[in-house]
Length: 71
Image (cartoon, rainbow, N blue to C red; front, side, top):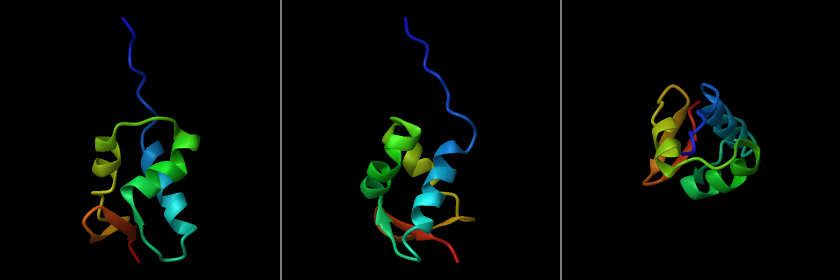
């Protein structure tokens, strides 16, 4: 039986913040964010992305499934 490895704390969130910073205030869908950072962080469940994006200290929901960095 394979044991699932947990990723380091906030790795996914930090990678999403880094990617959204490159958009200079622009927004991106969850699928765009996932495609951009998956090479860096590896495969993660979609629920992990949705959960991380709920942190209102860093992310602002623009519309359904679309987020940007909070000012």
